[in-house]
Image (tube, rainbow, N blue to C red; front, side, top):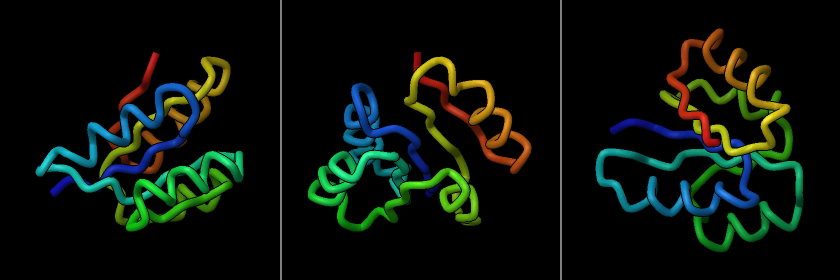
Length: 94
């Protein structure tokens, strides 16, 4: 089972989360977003996922195997670089 973390629960994030959650080979283990409203929405649909409002907290979750990034383009480089430096596989949405 591959444990997935998702950064961004705005436009594309909910679609990715839904697809991850129905794949029997994946576990949607964590969701990160800066918006309290978006995290509240994520909590309703994915109560088992750890929710974070900070990327520092998100990257401290050691059990994640891969990270999906569904954030504005300007943030992609830094987030993907940090994920790779932490030894994680990366899915980058754009």
